[in-house]
Picture 1: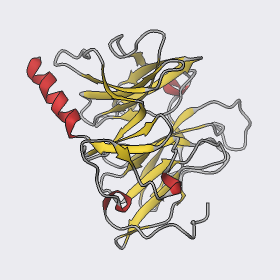
Picture 2 (picture 1 turned 90 degrees about the vertical axis):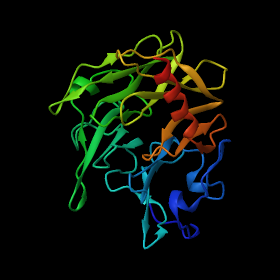
Picture 3 (picture 1 turned 90 degrees about the horizontal axis):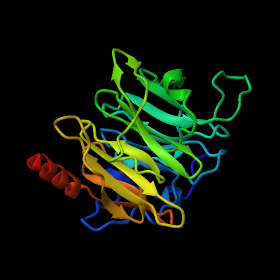
Length: 282
């Protein structure tokens, strides 16, 4: 993707946008490339790179903008992505050393295969990013993997799988370089008969944000806290008319998609306050 000639000169954190307050507001409304995102924007831990998937079309690759000499570059195709592959939903590991993403590309280059969304990963190397590789079959053999997912500090993976208008959120423990068999999260998170999807796990693995929607009703973002005994609290609604939560690595702000597709953000301090309240109660 060539650089837009009219991309504005942007300096400062968050693509030069003034951080929001406690009331959600649209993000970067004057930058068309950042509106109606399909895969929510993700910032690197140092805040000097941003990755996102534009409005959903399989032809569109994942984009990246970097802060160079204090100024953000116009978005270009991320080095691990390509057009016409159905690449989507980038997610940086908390240490910034890996980028995970969804893709419909065939598992083996040059060999045709039924289109299916699978999770891929690329790792930081001296030259930039490695060639993407598939996560193992223990993950990607599952049907219906779709949309956003996330990993915590330990590498544990949280993702959604769907069938029709319903969906459930799973997690797979990561230990000694291997994923365990994915397990469906408890009913406190996976409400029956509803589309539960797009999980964001906090780096410490103790706080989970995710989306829920049902036919004809606006999507909502819910939150659940992992208790000391390892169980999850009953999910509570965090934001109405909102979906696909993404908290920046330093925990300062929450990005999400409004019901009309507009990218929004809000100060995320209220989420941490909720967590601390739950910890005191338990």
